[in-house]
Length: 500
Image 1 (tube, rainbow, N blue to C red):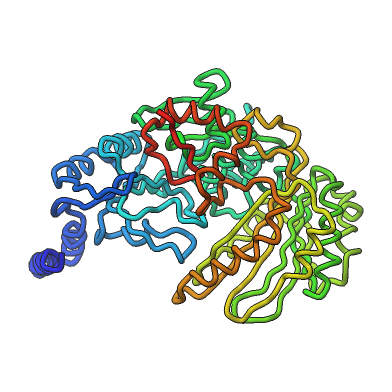
Image 2: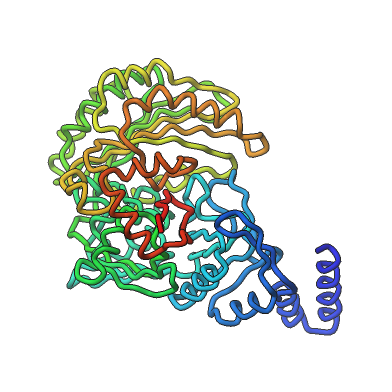
């Protein structure tokens, strides 16, 4: 590899010396984009496989988008995901510009049984949107959003981010549930569930999906809706990426005013018991148009911490003071950030809360109730450390989410009132083992209060745990997996293993 790189660099330099600057740059980039030889890769089963240069070159020629190999311009940025602690190197990366490119990539991977990862926004904590030695399909080059205000429908391409959905829909006074961080990928969020600031009012993101177009493991592009391929339509709404790559979503939209009331109220750590107690009681009785999150956190490098209640109220403005009053009765705030705000602005307000220069690992679980024992357990055991950051937070569910039958979509966790997370953060240059062991041990205190976990946060769950987590929907999902992905090409997810 060093000799090849030296020869490529020498040729590029020689060409550059004889060309004008712009031509020299183009020539240099071209030299970094040639398939120079066979490519070592990994199958889904973990075996090594050699991809012949001619086959890789043919794939590249068939794409309108780009094929990136290690060393190519753009490869390093493409392989990375949001969690900096994930450091994997795909053998090849396809950056499609449309469904045809995705079909070519899936067909190539299926014929060779390659390990496949699909990246949209790259938010997977466990790094499921990248892989070591396989093919990454990076959808960042396949983005677009269009809204039909007459039918109240949004048409969103598979690689789009939530910000585009919010921006285009709100232009017409329309919305749908779209997460809490605007640079999240629409596909990753929606296929597993899709919580958000409006989910209690309008249901999960997947509850608002009218139809999808999906490239399944056989390389075919299928349309799925309530009337066309209804089994696949049922399965993709909660089954994650188990059945293929979604190239287009159709979302039903709802009318809503542009201005909401929301923001963060910060309390001292000493008031943790009282503030969490308020949250536990009020979240179960809150109106559907109120969304509340609770966070207790201590940042890396400090032994101090704070509690935060995050609110988004989308109901009548005149009722906001009454609806939000319980928050202020819980304690004496250090800071009150709740105010009238543009909905798209509050959707961007948490965009910098994800890791940038540190590694993270999390455990999560749905809670169907928040008894005083859980509140006390958290209040008594939360600790701040200099050597690691620790966070426990709750994401509000219930409301409209819980009024959908558990078998209406593949997402089964309809009775939860919140999703509970425990997160640990540590310096990137440190080994992860002690920090991961700490949060796993810490989580054991809370796990008895949980009932399953959010598949979008899957990291290292065993197959048996995954099966149990789909609850009464698991057997139907296995049948769909057998039909649409019998070789388990799409396995980097909360994996449903085929039985054929």
